[in-house]
Length: 150
Image 1 (cartoon, rainbow, N blue to C red):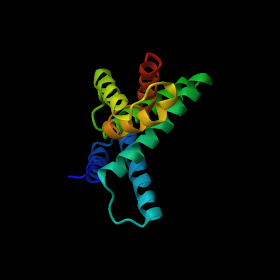
Image 2 (cartoon, rainbow, N blue to C red):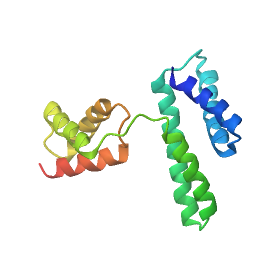
Image 3 (cartoon, rainbow, N blue to C red):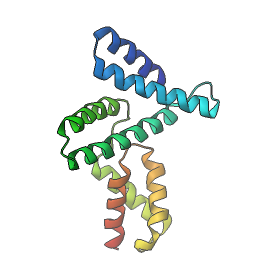
Image 4 (spheres, rainbow, N blue to C red):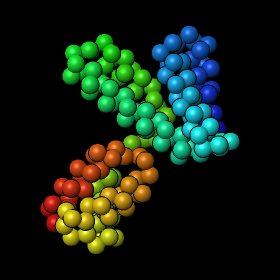
């Protein structure tokens, strides 16, 4: 079953359970997927494309949470946190920090990086090897630390 099919199945299940928060969040994901399909004139989407859409929505939720907390709107921040948790279910399991660090060491050797100036080449390799299973911000911080210690 593709990720898109799973999202559609979960939407139907949430509707049957009368879970308005989950059904609303999953329906929003379905709408975003459909919008991208229309924009690209695609019949179906790969799991990688669906994951990219979900990650974009997660990033928006994280930014919203930050803004709502700064503005003192805990009620809206809590709503966004619930939606964020629902969306994260559809992402592949995150890599552990030590796994990311192993990828970084491997990428540094592969690229021949010798200073922080080489961060772009190392990040590209790490991002490709992580294949969406690691947070970009965390990867960037770890790469900077490792390159700074060379």
